[in-house]
Image (cartoon, rainbow, N blue to C red; front, side):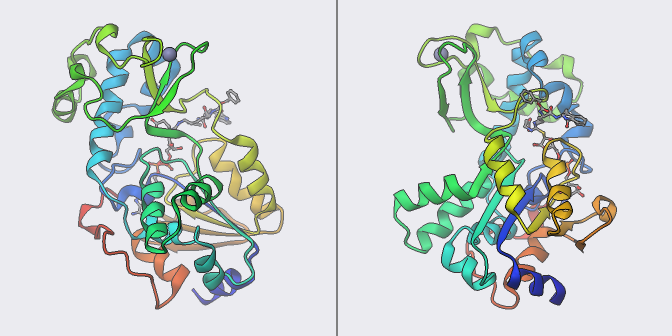
Length: 306
Ligand code: BV8
Ligand code: ZN
């Protein structure tokens, strides 16, 4: 812990690379964890353009299920700890030499952005500052669960829509999903009854990045990673590219890498510090030592989906 705080004190450009483990403490299943989606549903096969083309009803039920869960959950202490680093005055306190902090998250649940908005409001930042800091310090590289995107590329309308169910035909299907793991028992919803683009009425899709699709803001991320001298790798199995490659870019450029994970099997060699345990328990202390900022709304560990 001392070694980490020494490194924090002299770091200039900090990047946090987060995965499903960051939201596990909020009760959102990870892809691999015991109750994780990966086992129940082969997310790779469902999270692809091919799957959506061949069965949009199935894929929309998969994302409706995840929208329903994410809509019921709240950020945990790890979300708030990272969100606090997006506040310049707080970053200065934690890392006095830091010029920048950027969170690059693989999560599409929106909990990091929600945590930041709350922290920023408590620091009485203006709405405009909150929007600018959110844009500049939080990168949702795999898109957002509550974004919907028109499938007609000539229209390309994208909007943030947290309505649940997003269309009447999906109502209640989350129950079915919960009970029946056998995919073929999900109702076949006609494409005309699935979410449609409010602009051109074409079929709409979840605003997330599917396997085989380019990630969001790739050039911004590359420039952040290239200049970073400290990477915080939080709750990720580092199995999906390009996200899993960023920490070695930081290490290869002489930077430090600190890993926060319940498993120590994600630890690779080199200039690494590793903190094994629940990130919602360890990260706030590692960053703030004894004076962890209070976050009244942070969910306590009993919701965990580790
Ligand atoms: C692309 C959104 C090209 C959708 C997701 C090179 C080599 C091999 C393969 C590839 C390669 N380059 C590209 C590929 C293909 C592919 C890939 O990486 N495949 C893998 C399977 C090998 N990559 C892509 O397709 C990427 N796109 O390459 O496009 C291109 C380029 C330009 C232009 C056009 C095309 C895009 C990949 C993005 C896919 N979308 N999500 C959705 O969510 O439905 S990926 C999704 O899975 C997540 O976002 C995340 O990235 C990944 C899951 O990983 P984790 O988040 O780490 O979760 P996991 O459950 O695995 O692990 C949780 C960890 O937390 C564990 O370690 C656990 O121990 C820990 N944990 C649990 N609880 C806690 C905890 N830790 C701390 N505290 C706790 N409480
Ligand atoms: Zn459209």
